[in-house]
Length: 361
Image: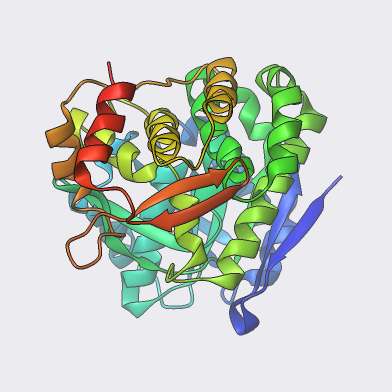
């Protein structure tokens, strides 16, 4: 069964198709192609698993496809790797109407989308996510970027895809560590705006970890629905969309401080979310019981609930590169309750440092 959501952005509206076996459904892809030519961007891990199936599907629709296979890993999300995509686009005489298809996880989706935004000042692209994190979060909403040594995702563009093809059957080949990392983003939606979903997750974490297809389909759909609603309300992150960054300011500091790829993004977000919950509790906004529930669900998902010991000073130094910093002041996504997040600068640096120290080993 296919479920379809729409990200309603006027003339730039697009569908999110969710289901199993969608890579073999060329009818879902072909209506969005201006030309009968595509460039599929993937990586060394995903390519051997799904590249041929996607190219065969495109061929059935009369679309000729070439491929670009990138090295795999967050540490390759940089200008040097991005230029491999531009080299392929130029050497194959791709035009502004050629479709770029990003086949892979969040790194591939971000880099493919950013390349599409830049090439000839904009070419169409499609997201075909293959990790839980990209299925529920990074493939939806048009955030594209690469990393800089001083900060994660600091160079990029808002650029919406033409469609998202979310084939949950690709999760069968996802390593357990990456699957668990993706659950951090699923849990996030319950924490920031969907308390009923958080309660559902408390009752179904083990089903998700076991790969129960019905549970996965529900979680992916509910997550994408939450993400789509937020994007429609605030496409360029001037208000509500910033709430999607719960745990990310601390998490990005972890990723940058340790070196990209040492911790997976979802692992860093999980630990960052617990620091944010700790800080919310110290502000009197969350109860200790709330923090305990949040810690418990991340532990059951097999995710870290403590950050690495880099020192509060180093955390705050790295956090100053966050995109939510305004007039030099740290603004953080915190929780007023489970299911209710807020962007706030209410905490001074001493309190932030105390929360970091309390939640880092």
